[in-house]
Length: 319
Image (cartoon, rainbow, N blue to C red; front, side, top):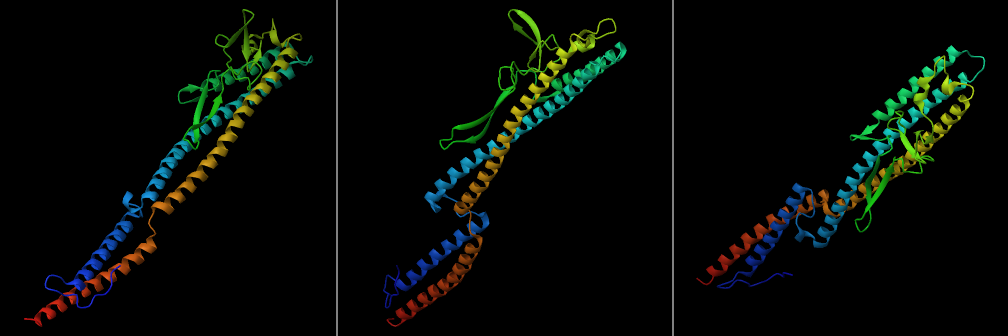
């Protein structure tokens, strides 16, 4: 700590002048530091500014970057679940229309022509089911044809291990329905094998083939005759239930993703706040320091000038 010196002028030294110069150098350095912090907006511009703060902030920045990537991943997963759930809702509504036509056709008061017309109308709805299945796509992948499964990284553990959410819409997922989740109408691609015999399956219901609706005709009512129509109505009801189960499964994943999305947003905000407290400059404080040091710089210059002048006066006494 410098202390004022009297009679500090010697032939080879001028202590007051050197002290003024040292104070001027320190003040100028602090001015440069404040100007850098004000221009960059950062308190830590190099590791030497605050070693512990530098390490902590870089660690927080790294994790925050990973959280932002997880937020993007969670958003993509939400998009997939929303697309799938909308399709399930539409399919459920179409099956409701098919079942309604079947219930009307089960009435003995209707003639053959009316029943054929109802079957053809129901078949048009079944065709739309196929359209929805074929057009439910994300990233070039079919979502509802019984083979879609994906994982998304939506968080990180303390050791930076991945936390993932899985969406399994494959026919192997027992959570969707009793037998599977294949919603295809096309019987050529929609079959399973039971006891070496191929049987049709729609929405997890074995033996249900919606293409049979198109085979109903005046000479052969097929699935709309008195013997088969109630079985068909029950099968459609079971298919509707399975579609609802699949929709509930996807809805549960959606709820998880929405919760995680909010969690990630809160965590990112809190990390940003922590990083700012460590890394960002206090603009008001730096402006005050700059003004203070600029004033001290001027007074140090005046002191240095005065100390040098006093030195000259001292030497004149001995000349």
